[in-house]
Length: 148
Image (cartoon, rainbow, N blue to C red; front, top):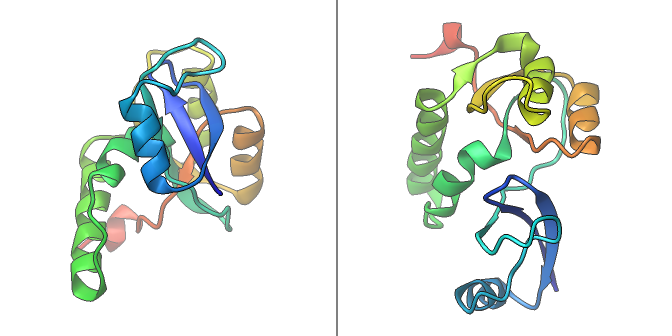
């Protein structure tokens, strides 16, 4: 069995259990997947990651589409694809720095307009966001001063 973290177009996150990755694709194609919160049938897989020390984070929904379109590769090709993925995140999200946790909450609770953000958060802040049901994804993005 494989457990995937899923999200609907209404940004509700939930888990789905499948016999294989192909089983997910088949069920999605047949319209059998449905959000348990809002019954939306537009379901996507999210990336999953372990929580580490202070790390850059971005809402999972902000990067899910790009990550899913990346074919599996190895060695140098994998490095290139990963860099393309990070470039996409950098270009298509707003850097809110250390205010990430606060801004992610404001977006999640609809206190401000929804937008794709990135920033830094401690492991504790990241865990708290996830516990609140706020989708975030730790990413190894270097500080802007370290960009080449």
